[in-house]
Length: 95
Picture 1 (tube, one colour):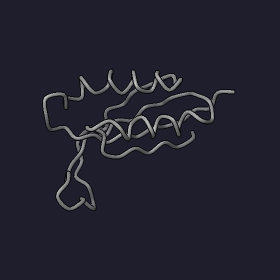
Picture 2 (cartoon, rainbow, N blue to C red):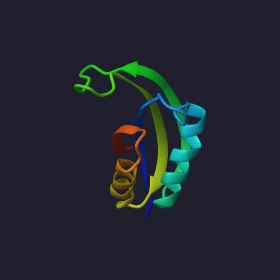
Picture 3 (tube, one colour):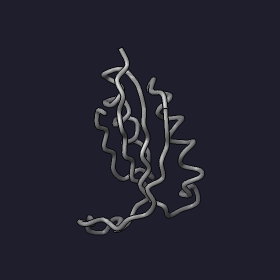
Picture 4 (cartoon, rainbow, N blue to C red):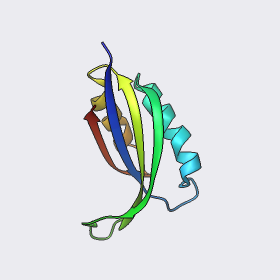
């Protein structure tokens, strides 16, 4: 049975591979690799963090993915995205 999820992914816009146009296909590919299916992608833009981490980012680009997948897919997605250097924060919630 497939469930619908809303994944909000915050990434660091700095660096050579940091543009949104390059990150959306890369993140969509990662979602596909954990057996998730991307329904819709929405760029929420760049926002300052309310509580920046010391010595780390103070701003990030927010992307929102509507995905469908099995019940274990969010866990696999978070584990895979943790290994991605550009990704700073991930929130996956059931729709």
